Length: 172
Image 1 (spheres, rainbow, N blue to C red):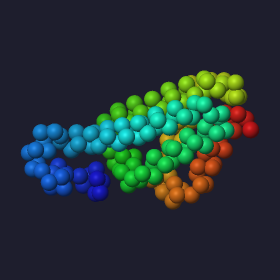
Image 2 (image 1 turned 30 degrees about the horizontal axis):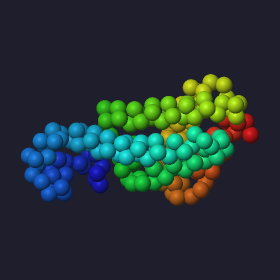
Image 3 (image 1 turned 30 degrees about the vertical axis):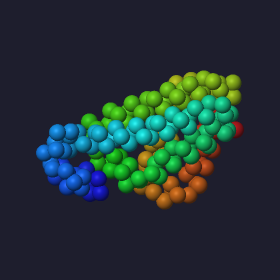
């Protein structure tokens, strides 16, 4: 998707893949099906990594788990920021169900973590806290990809997000 969503054509993809456009159409009937498959592959890869890393976070106290979680999220967005930019800026709304399901899964994992560590927390509504944590990190990381990609390469964004979330959860 070098040329963005608008510049993507099935003819160009077929040529790049070294197959006929007819062969491509056997698997992907149109551009949206192709992009949906690309999103699905991206989400599956990301969520596999996240699930693997999330398991190790459950044993950590909040002040160690949050920095690790934020680092993982920023690291995942550092991988192919141009693709993340296209996803965030150019895709039609109908392309997002797979992304939405990954956010719901991430929020459920965050909720389970918070439940296991509620004795450490000052927040009381763990559903809202899980939503806020995941949305804060995801939204700000995507904003950095789009508006300030250099922030993904410095410790500043990561450090400030961690400070914000730990203070929110622990009050200190």
